[in-house]
Amino acid sequence: MNLSRRSFFKQAGAVALPLIAGCAAAGTLTHRVPVQNGKAFVAVADFPELSAVGGAIKLQVEGKKDPIFLIRAEESRYLAFSSVCTHLGCQVRKLPQSFRCPCHGSTYDLEGAVLRGPAQKPMTRFRTEAVDGGVIIF
Image 1: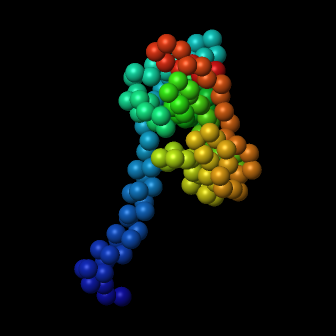
Image 2: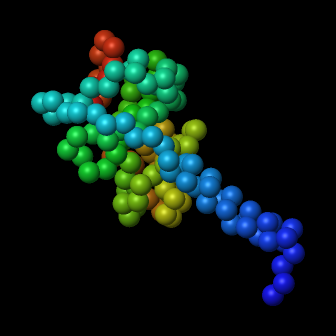
Image 3: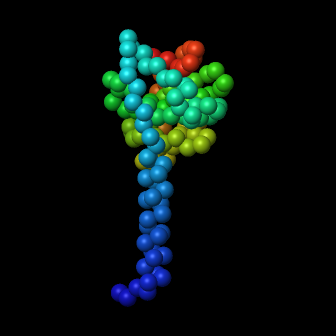
């Protein structure tokens, strides 16, 4: 098979672009957070992503196998969710207005409710408490 240079780059681009986009989405920085007495403290000022409602960060909480997403749901209300899809356990990704599982397409809203299956259960939520200067995740 003889490919012209133009055809080669078109085909390579068609394959590479989705891979690059997928890696960029999967490459969300994960911040490590220690746990004391069963609680993880997140200083909001340390994370510009949390300065606006809808902002989110991905945390690796000491003692938890899978990362947790911390979302600023309202001015003084934060939500924390497991990053594990409730369908078959894949790692969900944070999109601007939702969470999406790359394995089978389950989609969740920013409150963790299922928008689109195959998942049937909402995302696993951790209790949070907004305190002066930050958020405690239980």
